[in-house]
Amino acid sequence: MPKITAAKTIVTSPGRNFVTLKIETEDGVTGIGDATLNGRELAVESYLSEHVIPCLIGRESHQIEDIWQYLYRGAYWRRGPVTMSAIAAVDMALWDIKGKIAGLPVYQLLGGACRTGVMVYGHANGETIDETLAAARDYQALGYKAIRLQTGVPGMAGTYGVSKDKLFYEPADSDLPKETVWSSEKYMRVVPELFGRAREALGWDVHLLHDIHHRLTPIEAGRLGKDLEPYRPFWMEDPTPAENQAAFRLIRQHTTTPIAVGEIFSSIWDCKQLIEEQLVDYIRATVVHAGGLTHLKKIAHLAELYGVRTGCHGATDLSPVAMAAALHFDLSIPNFGVQEYMRHTAETDAVFPHAYSFADGMLHPGDAPGLGVEIDEAAAARHPYRRAYLPVARREDGSMHDW
Ligand code: EZ4
Ligand code: CO
Image (cartoon, rainbow, N blue to C red; front, top):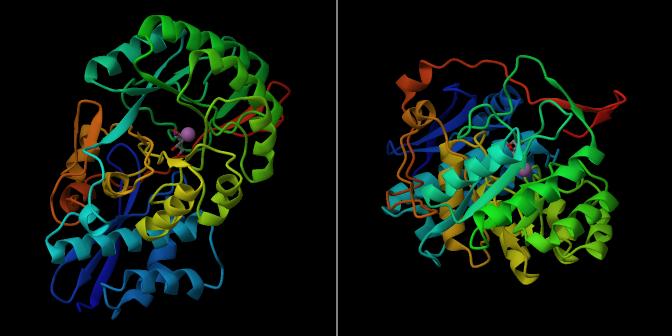
């Protein structure tokens, strides 16, 4: 079995920051994993360089589960986004190496494909409902079967999900956190209007999604879900902060609009009650922030028992390495729902050449051995790290709200 002989981190900013872990074995096989945590990139980089890489040297690269357990249990300090993103990067790189040695794409190692492709959703947004619907038509023209709709809220500047650049929404765009203003009352008036107009303009043969981004109280979310029911949304995402998993019981009492949660979850423990009580329909935990493929498989298997499907996070702050890993995973699990897919810029794609491809509203990971993504280190070096924060939100009276 090939031993790990070297590992290093690569930080690059081709339009936005990415942290990549590269592991090498004694046979010269290399694998890469994504370790990007938006706005906190160097915390994960340091956790890897200072605390994880020294423990990897000399270990058997094929023993993926054992290395996962060693890093998780061995730290004593468990879970949390920094730790779990670092473990995820190691895990992805080891699956990449195993696939390259086997000569198989990772989805074959995970059990093989149980669908022909991965349905993805794109982000349509605009300052006004008309602009959002025009963007949604562009996605329909590109072949998308599922589209997320976000629109500006009249009277509020800088609404979550509304970008200047239509195809490449990027919220982490300032050297210090940008201050935005929030009003749940104004927001809750515009979203049902957006969905009503969307069904008239786009028809019923397209899945429509919406991200609330943790902004509402449970009872407000129950009200909004009820108001959206006539338009049959595919899901409402992150209706309320999820630290208190029991809070979702209240939302469920009031609406049949499906619920998706979990893009900021770091382990199965964040999902447990939501899944076991069937308080959500889609679990969005993703490969880079929830401990890699090894851990995400366990979350998906638990969800399968309770009829909960997956809907992995796939914003631009997940690098093409994490996107590829998610696609191998999505292709191989029975309870896949949908995959978020925000396109990376051409600059990012040039640093991370990849085998996955889009056609007809679906992504496919391709059949290159391993994850099917490489990092061009010379290109990466041309894009040095730049500090970039996500915004913060305050209510109209100045008090802090959830961004
Ligand atoms: O704001 O990934 O569903 N997608 C999202 C994203 C998140 C960013 C934060 O890093 O909610 O746009
Ligand atoms: Co989201």
